[in-house]
Image (cartoon, rainbow, N blue to C red; front, side, top):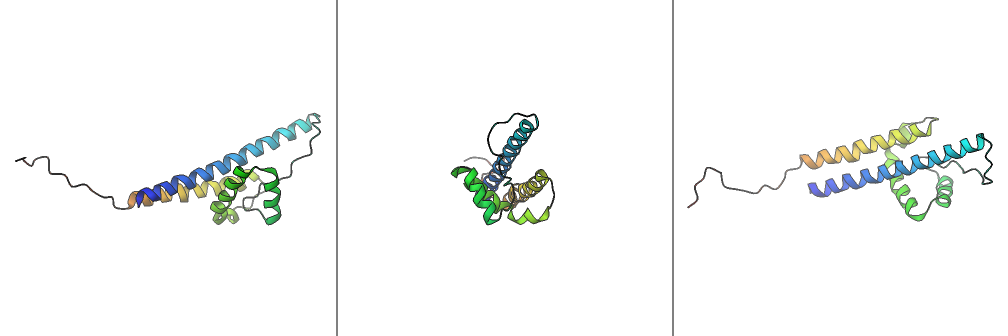
Length: 136
């Protein structure tokens, strides 16, 4: 049972980390485009809509589905489900705080918490003879 819980801890932590990495990449791309516009480099592409909510509404979800591919949307949906308990704890105007704090709390609960639970479960012990026992 401990191995199954460890696998769940690793997989949920991986989904949370991938979700945050995708968010960070999107924010860096958005910052780059903002800087290009500020410097007068007209690229001719329309500005991307801001769809970075941790727990998006139905409209935000539809907008995000239009911008992202199928595999990324699958990870985003799983990440939304894992971060849902922590989404309402933070209400900041800074999107890094809005995403970073729930991701950190999720890693603590799912990664560290489930890992500790798995380590606390009793393990199957193999019974070996005492090293002092004589062999007949």
